Image 1 (cartoon, rainbow, N blue to C red):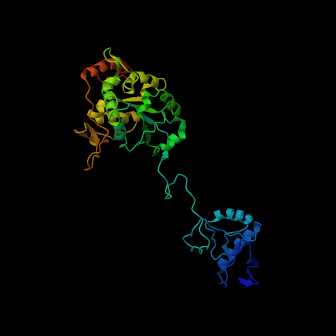
Image 2: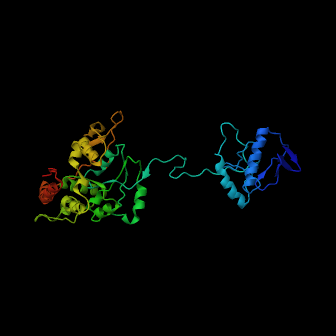
Image 3: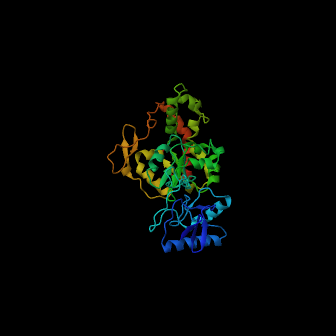
Length: 384
């Protein structure tokens, strides 16, 4: 190889130093081995065969991938850009084990491409956001928060911690918005969310059915009289000036006329609300949890919930510790010496004292609804 009049020749093939795509480094050229010279000649000859003066084989940073070959320019013409783009697959980026890397180009390195579904560190995020396959739809003050916290211990369940109220208050935002709230899950995991007001929302069964007719539904029920008192106790803690429980419960107490327009009373009419759900979902697709047994036998109730969801019985009695002060079970890690994790301060409040006669009147009011509910679901919850 020799330099003649600003050109490099090798075996009769010339390459101008002012070529639009490649440039020769300034300074004297060292004589390469016969092997290198032939390699350059083959590459240059191939480029001419393709109809261009010289085609450099460049990596993602615009660096030559040929040992001792001229360096590629960062700013070729438009036609050169197309040809360079075609040339990149000829060699993967980075040096091969048998050759040193070419000197870095003075221009800044191109940014790495963003991976779909990756986080800021560039590593893939685990799982996918999916619409829930299971919902805890009710009922308020029945024990839904306890069920949610207990089932979240299971490795095959990922649950949304907050109540999105999608099927009652935010349905107009659309399913894409709803999906965006969900935690990421693997193919083997179940996505679950809880909003207790769904059970008493007339439109919720149809809306959930339209999302997926295969959705599994969990309803946590409790003695409707006790539930109403708990509901009132919670409201009283936020609004101390509300009327008495007795005043809200009856339109005419002397006649025993219960005010079913008061939400705390109406929620406990379980049989009435269940009719709306059975228009869209078979009974086998709805699981009823006893709020009372959830306190006395949490492992047993959670075992049945796990069976209903089709997952292994991972949550057992080893996960629970009964807190006598709060009056309900708390979570603990079986092999941990850490203190048990109990529900928040808003759970386990001391109920307002109610006149026993009022309680008896409400029991009589709920009796026919309870009996119909027992018959429909095939369980006796023993609330009488």
